[in-house]
Image (tube, rainbow, N blue to C red; front, side, top):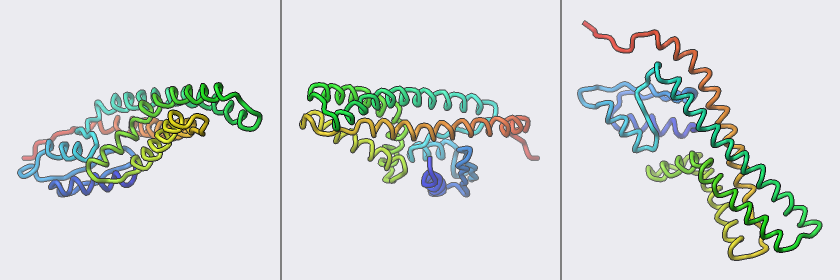
Length: 216
């Protein structure tokens, strides 16, 4: 997800015994060299899993399917975030207008509750890639970009829930949390689309090459 992830993976694989590990951030692919007499592929994949990343042996024949599944999941999360963001912002406009022109307390409380009900699924489902990345970093004692994003989301939502439940009439910021997830997912979705289109060409050529050779 960021340059910090690249460094973490390279250092983690080398610490596990790999002779060389280079990660290409553009296509999310790692080139690893190791001595099979002392280290096995399963050990390297287990190391990646322990660091919080899902790894699999590269196969040009199935990579297009992997890209398509990744883009589909990202677009679904983006759609949920867009739906939630659009509706939460409508309630926020009413609250902002009420701040200047007046609004009954019952209506303001209703708008805040509706914003909370829309915000929580967006943060839990659409924001899951960031939360999962932060949790993986926490387990391996790393602070990544996902950690920073998740910290901001959890603080914003947590403060807003406390204000909603314990301090009626206090300002809430569910709209900010939803919009953060929405805008960040736009970037992730564009990145996934670009990577998929670029990868289909190179992987089509690589698929023509023999993947295994016996040296005599």
